[in-house]
Image (cartoon, rainbow, N blue to C red; front, side, top):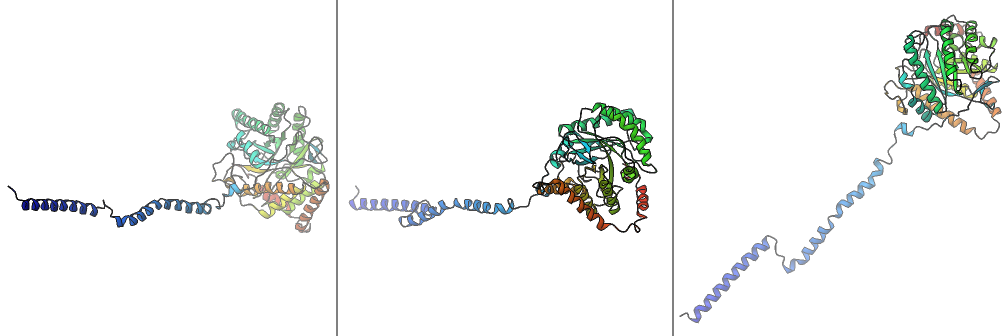
Length: 449
């Protein structure tokens, strides 16, 4: 039998053992962080508040990124082609006529055509498509395109056979339709050059223009250029004899179409033409210049012919040298542009291609054939585009003037004054014409492929 004393000891031992077990478990839990003591509750609450505030830190980063965003995007300068000024479409006048030596619309108001010339249709046909013509109208605003169809050079119309003749006529038809769809004028250019005298292929010209005028007799926008640049020893008498046979072929079908006639010495001799003009209506005579080669003397000849009442159309020009190469002569180019503006002359710049030469409007490094950006343009292309923008601003600044005739008269006087300032005495310049002729003869094969 167990005594009371022994029972008491046993209970004490059990309590001590239980306390030891509970204490050990509690100690282990506290050590591992599973138990929070009452006096630690305030500290734990603070830590909980800190944990709840931590998600706001990423939000602060987002705010800082948004504050920095304008510095990296909105304030960045735009690419140059996006910042280039836009050019509004030049006017389409409907049927044209030549009255009092000027190109006019059906109401007798002055008309001015400004555009580009293709290179040889056989050499760069990819630039003369419906899409490219539409883009030139939409993006550059030009209102005329010239189709340069070589006659005797490589793959020329008169030397390459009937199959290629059909290819060229198909290309012309595509361009005429595109120009018509986009309210533009189109020049069909019989591009004589190394054949020198247009009489060389006169029978082919008669057949060609007879076919063209019958096909496009209902098109008010088609202009016929019957010879490009007669040269060598070809005289105005030779050209006039040719014109007197070719023009009636056109007039028998279309009595009103504008016809352009080339002049001697690479379309630069207007004096001989003024002394003995053709006896047809709606005729204009072509004048060509290249600013880096042709300067004060050539401008004076043009101004003298214009003041004498000769109707002139600049169907080809460039801001580089006469051989189609070199850099833009900005000083001389600006002077030529002043004359074109002052006399409201119609013109086509040479040439729409990416050929590796100064006169190509598209950079040789560009593969673009349509929707050209400013960066796609060559040096001459950019200068020409800037001219279109300047002309737009010039016309806008003069739109509020009520007496346009007085404005034109004043502009002509300003242009003549500029020409006079550059002109030396006639005695000093007596030999310059012959020197210029020699220079042009050296460039007889210019712009050949």
